[in-house]
View 1: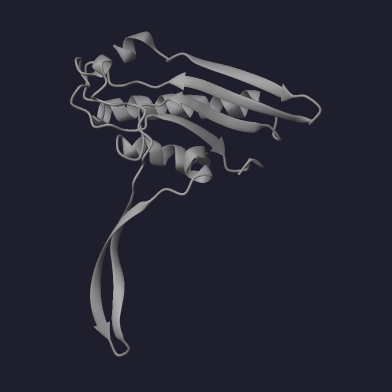
View 2: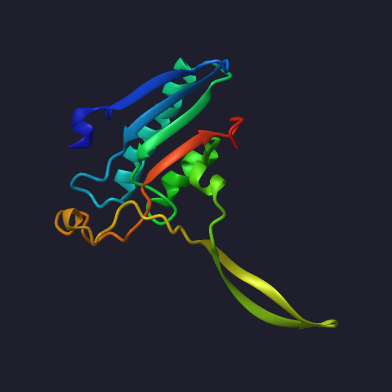
Length: 167
């Protein structure tokens, strides 16, 4: 169904901050959740990436170079779901403002290995634990429908361009 309708809607706004000489250019959007496809299928991830690219392009086209650029909204992706889309936005020089504003706990698996000086801890893996859940499968509104099986996650985001002075 997403392909039939063409581009998803997004709102672009440029807000001048009084007495500062600064402006914020932002895109507020709601990326696809998959329609009839699984929310993390290759096809859904491709559609979502094209929507994110469209937002990036719109900000580049309509913003002044010195504007603070933001992509905000229900992006239906994150660290625990459709991670490829999350990483795409990060590779596109946008930072997750929540992660920048708050140090999140990590979960690490460690093993002990001995060397000449005694025991040394070696990190095997580290995964970011995101305590902010904005989509909860226990919510009565989410308990039925095509995405009821999905895990709780943060799919609502505020991304800011890397060149932003806010970070």
